[in-house]
Image (cartoon, rainbow, N blue to C red; front, side, top):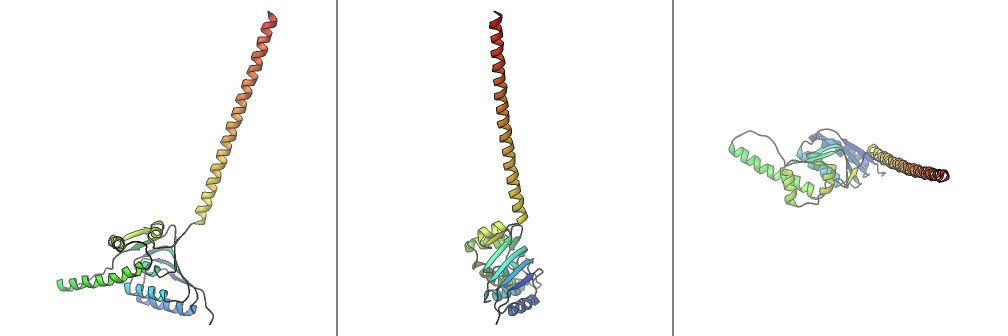
Length: 218
């Protein structure tokens, strides 16, 4: 059985049907390496957890690349990567499980209890990757935290930041321009010094000649 390297693009909200799309792609790869590109605001928490677990048990290497946004359920899926990469201008958002409902006080009390249980699944999805304490994670989830690539890397939500090549090229060009300007300035200062020395030399000669003439006139 030949393994097939496969790319999956998660560029939409996560629905229950999204699970089937991932299942088909993983089956087609026959255990080959998987790259998942993400730009998603999240969606169904149970579908997100299911996709996370599908990727975790996949035999091949799983690489996650956040192209734009990995928010809510999409960040849960991202945590399944063996390698998680974020572009330097991409974002990740994490938060507690939430929903909406209708009913009486008892219904809402049960709903709150259910959400706390669901939130444990969310927390467990992150804990395999991050390098912060449970209390710190809880604080981030409570704050509905938006993370830059740099912050995500520092906290352990990603392993690598993809730098913009154009930005790097511009940085190199700017550094080279600055070096050229410094060389020009140094050269100009050198020439100025030489000219000043030349002026002083000529003045000394003229002064000497003038003094000699005065002596001859005496």
